[in-house]
Image (tube, rainbow, N blue to C red; front, side):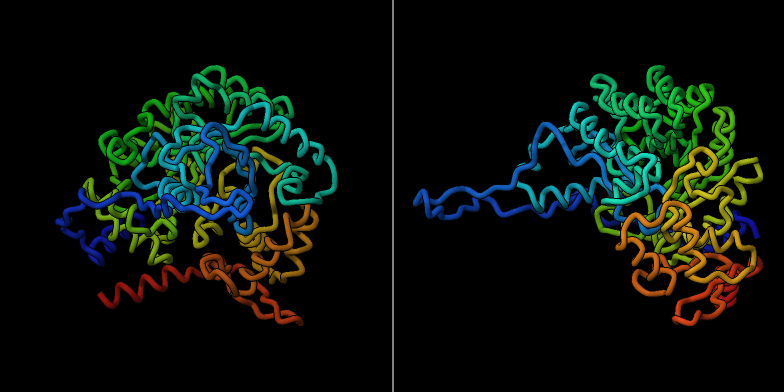
Length: 466
C-alpha cells in the first residue's frame, strides 16, 4: 500500500469537521500576563518601591545553548542572534511564537514593548572565542564546551528566524557566519528566508572549510496555501531561487517539510511541483517530521481553524495517533524516493528507515556529531544488521565518538533504552526494533528485524474494525 492509498483509508476514519465556531473573536496566541503595579516595602528606604523583572530591550546575550532535546538529537548545539516576542514571518503552524509569548509575558514586565533584539557581534565573538579553545581537546566541562570539542555543528534558526528583513541591513547573522568561516567551524542553518541566497551569504557559506549546509523549510509549493500559512515569509519561488544560488556554489541544501500535515500540505499535484522545483534548484536531500505533539495547544489550532483548516483532524491523525502519523510519513518518504530524493526524519517510527545516518540529511557533510542520544541509538542498532545489541555495546560506541555531552543526557537516553521516562522516546517506537531480552543487569537488549513493522499490524487491525 502506497501513501496515496493509505491517505484515502484514513480520510474515512476521521471525516473533516464543519468549522462553524466564531473563532475570530478568540485570542490566537495565549499570553499569561503578570501582576501589574506590584510593590514591596523597602526597609532601608522606608517606602514602597515598584518591583519589576525587565528584559533588555536592545540586545540578547543568551545566543548559544545545547537543546533541551539533546538526549534525542545528534546536532543539539543551537545558536540564534535575533529575538522578538513574535517572528515577522507569522507562520500559523509555528508554536515557537506561542511559547515565547507565554514565556515572556509570564516572567517579565516589559514584554509588550519589546521589539526586535539581537546579540552584538563583539559579544558573541568574545564568548565563542572562549569556547573555541576546546577544539581538538578531550571533551570536558559543560555541555556547550563538550559539543564544541566534538565539533558538533553550530545550528542557526531553531529558536528564531535569523534571516529576517532587519538582518539584510544589520548583517548580524552574516557577521556570525564570517566568524565561523574564519574558525572553519561546521555550520548548519534552518530558514524560510530567501536572504540566505544573497551573494555575500552564499560566499561566506561556500568558503567555510568546516563545511556548511542549509535547511530551507518549504512545506508546500502552493502559493495560495503558503500565503495563508506563512503570511510574512518569502514565497516558495524566492526560496527556490536561494536554494539554486547555494547549490550552484557547492553548499548542501536540504528541503525541509516540517510540519508534514495530512490533508493540508500533501495535495498530489502540489507535491509533484514541489519535487520538480527542488530538483531544478539542485536539491536532492529532504528532511521531514510530523507535527510536534507539544504543539497541540488551543492557540495553534485556532490559528489554523480561522483560515479554514481542520487542525483537530490533522493533529489526531499525525500526532495523537503517533503510530499512524509515523506510518503516513514513512510512506510519503517512500514516494519522494521514487524521484531520487534522499529522505530522513526525526520521527522515531520512521528513523530506522532513514537514508542518511543523521536525520538532518548531513551525515556525509560534517564529521562531528553527538552520538549519545536516542536517535543515534536507533541507528546503531539498525547498523548491527540483526545482531543483538546491549547497552554496553552502545555506550562503548558513544565513548569512541567523543562520549556524552552530560551525565543528565546519558540518564535520559538510558531511560529511553530501558523503556522508562518519556514514552515518546522509547526505542520500541522504531520500526523493526524488537526486545531480544535483558542482560545480567536487567538492561534491555535490542535487535533490528527489518521485516517487522508494528505500525502495519496496527493498521490492519484498524481497517478490520471499520
